[in-house]
Image (cartoon, rainbow, N blue to C red; front, side, top):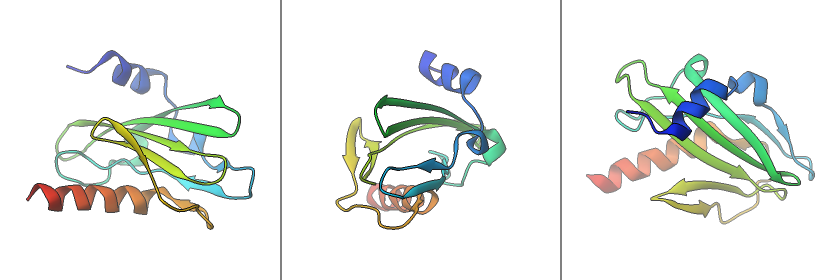
Length: 125
Protein backbone atom coordinates (compact mmCIF):
# COMPACT_ATOMS: atom_id res chain seq x y z
CA UNK A 1 0.00 0.00 0.00
CA UNK A 2 1.42 3.36 -1.03
CA UNK A 3 1.38 6.38 1.24
CA UNK A 4 -0.77 9.35 0.28
CA UNK A 5 2.36 11.39 -0.43
CA UNK A 6 3.86 8.73 -2.71
CA UNK A 7 0.57 8.49 -4.59
CA UNK A 8 0.56 12.28 -4.98
CA UNK A 9 4.11 12.24 -6.39
CA UNK A 10 3.18 9.55 -8.92
CA UNK A 11 -0.10 11.17 -9.97
CA UNK A 12 0.91 14.84 -9.99
CA UNK A 13 4.65 14.63 -10.59
CA UNK A 14 6.34 15.39 -13.87
CA UNK A 15 8.93 13.40 -15.77
CA UNK A 16 12.57 14.37 -15.09
CA UNK A 17 12.92 15.93 -18.56
CA UNK A 18 10.08 18.34 -17.73
CA UNK A 19 11.68 19.44 -14.42
CA UNK A 20 15.40 19.53 -15.20
CA UNK A 21 17.79 21.25 -15.62
CA UNK A 22 17.62 23.52 -12.57
CA UNK A 23 19.70 26.69 -12.73
CA UNK A 24 21.23 27.98 -9.49
CA UNK A 25 22.12 31.62 -8.76
CA UNK A 26 25.88 30.99 -8.67
CA UNK A 27 25.89 29.42 -12.12
CA UNK A 28 25.67 25.75 -11.19
CA UNK A 29 23.19 23.54 -12.95
CA UNK A 30 21.41 20.36 -11.87
CA UNK A 31 21.16 18.35 -15.05
CA UNK A 32 20.01 14.92 -13.93
CA UNK A 33 18.30 12.94 -11.20
CA UNK A 34 18.36 9.18 -10.77
CA UNK A 35 16.26 7.10 -8.40
CA UNK A 36 17.72 3.75 -7.36
CA UNK A 37 15.54 0.87 -6.19
CA UNK A 38 15.56 0.28 -2.42
CA UNK A 39 15.46 -3.48 -3.02
CA UNK A 40 18.03 -4.22 -5.74
CA UNK A 41 19.86 -0.90 -6.07
CA UNK A 42 19.33 -0.69 -9.83
CA UNK A 43 18.44 2.64 -11.40
CA UNK A 44 14.75 3.16 -12.01
CA UNK A 45 14.11 4.03 -15.67
CA UNK A 46 13.60 7.75 -16.29
CA UNK A 47 10.27 7.09 -17.98
CA UNK A 48 9.03 5.39 -14.78
CA UNK A 49 10.13 8.25 -12.51
CA UNK A 50 8.02 11.22 -11.46
CA UNK A 51 9.21 14.35 -9.66
CA UNK A 52 7.37 16.97 -7.65
CA UNK A 53 9.42 20.17 -7.69
CA UNK A 54 8.89 22.95 -5.16
CA UNK A 55 10.76 26.13 -4.28
CA UNK A 56 9.62 26.83 -0.69
CA UNK A 57 12.33 29.49 -0.29
CA UNK A 58 13.81 31.56 -3.11
CA UNK A 59 16.44 29.60 -5.07
CA UNK A 60 16.05 26.49 -2.87
CA UNK A 61 14.74 23.51 -4.80
CA UNK A 62 12.99 20.54 -3.19
CA UNK A 63 12.65 17.48 -5.39
CA UNK A 64 10.44 14.61 -4.26
CA UNK A 65 10.68 11.68 -6.61
CA UNK A 66 9.09 8.26 -6.95
CA UNK A 67 9.92 5.52 -9.39
CA UNK A 68 8.92 1.94 -10.11
CA UNK A 69 11.70 -0.61 -10.53
CA UNK A 70 11.37 -2.84 -13.60
CA UNK A 71 12.94 -5.82 -11.84
CA UNK A 72 11.39 -5.70 -8.36
CA UNK A 73 8.15 -3.82 -9.12
CA UNK A 74 8.87 -1.81 -5.96
CA UNK A 75 8.06 1.88 -5.67
CA UNK A 76 11.03 3.83 -4.32
CA UNK A 77 10.84 7.43 -3.14
CA UNK A 78 13.67 9.92 -2.73
CA UNK A 79 13.82 13.44 -1.32
CA UNK A 80 16.51 15.93 -2.32
CA UNK A 81 17.11 19.63 -1.70
CA UNK A 82 19.44 21.84 -3.67
CA UNK A 83 20.49 24.97 -1.80
CA UNK A 84 21.24 28.27 -3.59
CA UNK A 85 24.99 27.89 -2.99
CA UNK A 86 25.09 24.40 -4.54
CA UNK A 87 24.94 22.23 -1.41
CA UNK A 88 23.06 19.00 -1.98
CA UNK A 89 20.84 17.64 0.81
CA UNK A 90 18.93 14.37 1.01
CA UNK A 91 16.94 12.34 3.53
CA UNK A 92 18.82 9.53 5.23
CA UNK A 93 17.24 7.55 8.07
CA UNK A 94 14.49 10.14 8.36
CA UNK A 95 16.86 13.12 8.69
CA UNK A 96 18.21 15.67 6.24
CA UNK A 97 21.96 15.33 5.63
CA UNK A 98 24.12 17.25 3.18
CA UNK A 99 27.33 17.22 1.28
CA UNK A 100 30.06 18.87 3.35
CA UNK A 101 31.21 20.91 0.36
CA UNK A 102 29.85 23.28 -2.21
CA UNK A 103 29.33 21.93 -5.71
CA UNK A 104 31.69 23.62 -8.15
CA UNK A 105 30.56 21.76 -11.24
CA UNK A 106 27.08 20.72 -12.39
CA UNK A 107 25.69 18.48 -9.67
CA UNK A 108 25.87 14.83 -10.79
CA UNK A 109 22.79 13.52 -8.95
CA UNK A 110 23.05 10.08 -10.47
CA UNK A 111 26.58 9.60 -9.16
CA UNK A 112 25.95 10.92 -5.65
CA UNK A 113 22.73 8.93 -5.28
CA UNK A 114 24.45 5.74 -6.51
CA UNK A 115 27.37 6.19 -4.10
CA UNK A 116 25.03 6.78 -1.16
CA UNK A 117 22.98 3.65 -1.97
CA UNK A 118 26.16 1.58 -2.45
CA UNK A 119 27.56 2.74 0.92
CA UNK A 120 24.29 1.94 2.69
CA UNK A 121 24.20 -1.57 1.16
CA UNK A 122 27.81 -2.18 2.29
CA UNK A 123 27.00 -1.03 5.82
CA UNK A 124 24.01 -3.40 6.00
CA UNK A 125 26.21 -6.41 5.14
